[in-house]
Length: 239
Image (cartoon, rainbow, N blue to C red; front, side, top):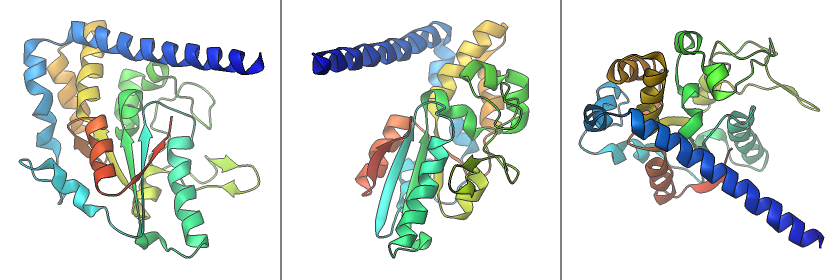
């Protein structure tokens, strides 16, 4: 009986998540004009990583190397887990004999996790904390800043461990690679534009211009997850 209840509950949760996902896409599709669809690759202008080639976006993934490789698939804010798990992966591999530089970690920010790729002023202007349900770890209110970009000591604590350095900039210093989904940026910017009665192309342009240093825009998050796995990365769902 217990097993049947668990299976039923799990199915309901999956169906709810599926409906939310397709509902978001449907809303976005209604707001995207033909011009917006044509500009799906407009974010390519912001690619600045030395590994990126506009004609061959696979080039960026050639940075993946080393003994242990993993990709964390972040589809939504999930407290600190999309950023804590990469740190745990590096720390525990080092503890078992593999230094940071001999590992590769990729974090794909897609779907509802894309605001983490953007700078503070966009969080304040577009109220990403409210829209994407992100709580500031210090104020405990809806965040008006990117809490994972240059956090202050003490912003993130783990019981039994204490302060943890899991800011995007701190993880980048340890070699963690971050990329963000252009398709999700296109859809969400169009949804915001419709709600705010503004131009979708202009909002997308502003968002792509505000991508944090070192974060790569990729054609889509699912594309990136696949490419990372083709480069030998194990897959881990990060929320």
